[in-house]
Image (cartoon, helix red, strand yellow):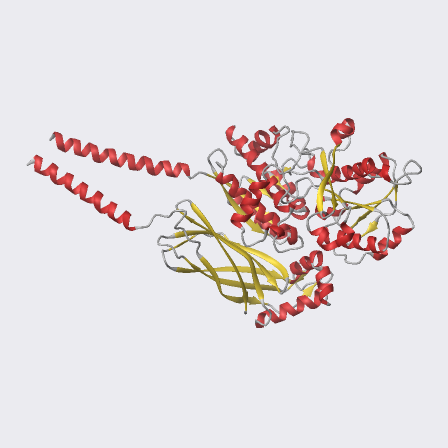
Length: 415
Length: 199
């Protein structure tokens, strides 16, 4: 009888242990769902593809390194072909799937979804860096890990004024001359022109006639010839790479003699390939390091690129992979903080995650990140590079907040 | 009597443990050394849906609905063979690749549905890719201008050629930079693949 009892107890204990082990494994399988909206087929797919690959690789890295306080990120990544109706459809799917945050993409989807994400309280981390997305009272759930376009343009003009203008023969004899080249009808291209002109005026530039250059342009001779009369010392380009390369080529061929300042989407590893000799000396703003540069975490970016996409040669990978890592790692940090505070709701991720970051160092060559409840400009430092002798080198770091604290705090937020 | 029963029960348990242990021993355990990357090959490409070649700008009033810039869709389906050379089953977590019409990369697609492939067996996976004239037009205009010029053609001529000739399987479609992620007992392997159809 005693033995029978013992036997029953043994079997029951085994059963309990089995149940416990089973439930523990279920508990260990907790996931946090994140959506990613990418363009791998549409108008921006040349850069969008590399960004999308970077997002997936970075999430693998996060999961391999403890995830979000032990929870794994489940990534739902979709292509929307830069079609706005499809972006809205995919957004509805993300909501149905209960994604807690979305890694978004360009100006089109970001602008279209801004009111919706604010209403639904879903953090939306975009690769559109318009200054007007930085004012929380208007777009509280839009965030990004980059220098906004307006700060980029202000930084570029300031760096050229400080570093290049004093070396010109006419320095001290007259005002420097600047002109802007961009697609006037494009909200993306024109978003920072107002800030750029204000900065140029403040520094005492003479501003020439704007040149309307389509994002599809491969011939810009008429615009360059129109500028010849004004004789600019420097041009500011705010289009994407192909049309910027076309402008640089024509400017070089027609001996305009102006330096070139380029916003981040026109300044990547493909620019020298397309513009050739005309890219020499081009100055651009790059909030993250170029692919392969010696900065913290770049070894991981390369390791995961090799591991998960070995079919794509490393020389074809670009700064857009690094840019994607910054977005993914920044979001992961916000999720960790919110999870630690016990609130993974959209509002929790915003308040206990993003808005608790003060000079947070991601690595990847990006300036320290700060978000507050009243200011979503994640950084005030514009990192300015110069392309010389076949490589991109850091030329200057312009901290606009440090240099113009009053204007930064009271005048420049939100445009 | 009791003693006999206890002995019998103990013997049964020991036998079950030995049997289970034996079965487990028969299955090879995945290790970094014995985990071979599965082999992914393109079996075929199917023009799943073709609607001819056409494009309407926003200025054209449609019979119903709102005007927009729209072009003919084209749906392609890629069927891959995924062979597992290992002595144990492996899980395919995702598979992705870029599609190029001639030398122009136009689409990157992926399949994220997980699939188990038995030891030594070959599964098939179908991945659909959607194209349309409007979307490919923008992609070519923003990125392919210089290449088209060098080729001595223009964007409309190029799109018409693809939309009319791909359904006849007379233009080669390339699968580039393909990568499929496989898992076995926590270990990861990535298989790469490239292909052209028709060859």
